[in-house]
Image (tube, rainbow, N blue to C red; front, side):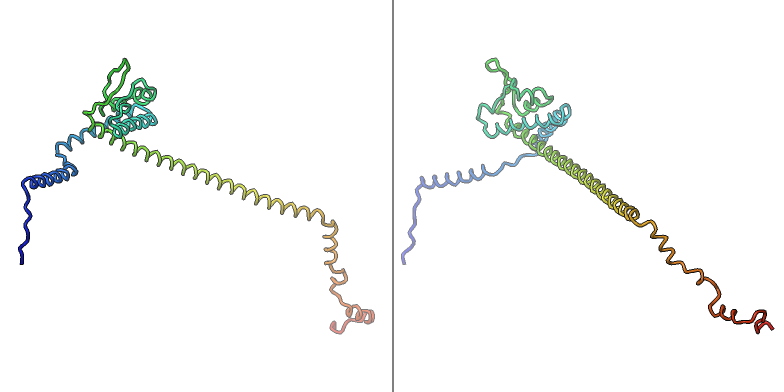
Length: 251
């Protein structure tokens, strides 16, 4: 029986195999999310709290509810565009004199401060004022965008609940008004029926003969002779008795 053949591996091949294993291990390590330390988590929490305060009370309190919602939504759009296309020049900056930026960020209190906190810094280019994003603040942009998204989500849910409540209140009011209307119509129909019955009764009494009641009364009254207490036999006995002769029972 022949012994199994051994395959010899050159040192060069061993080196290539080791490099491949190391590269695979590095790839697996890079794909796994890095665990943040307690200090990093605490710092991120503080940043989130800062952004939350910039929204409420920063933007919400000094502006109307509608304006605050619109400004926060504009900030979210700016952050989403930049995170989706970080190398697009038109998303890396905005002009402060733009009409939309004026209405949504510059004029409302607290809105431009939020953009600055996310990493947009004022500068002048070709004698035009801009706010340009600094890539060093990419993590702040991510955190700020997350807080904006959560705020818009909660506010949208509240507005939808309020709209449903208003719709239900309106529907209930309409149903109550319809019930009152139907009850009024039922009462009117009932009154009309009663009035019609009474009208028919009056009409029937008006067409009845005037002597019908008296004729009925005369037919029901017996003749005077029938009302007397004497009988025919009594009259006959009196006529046959001799005048002056007392009756037998008088003795």
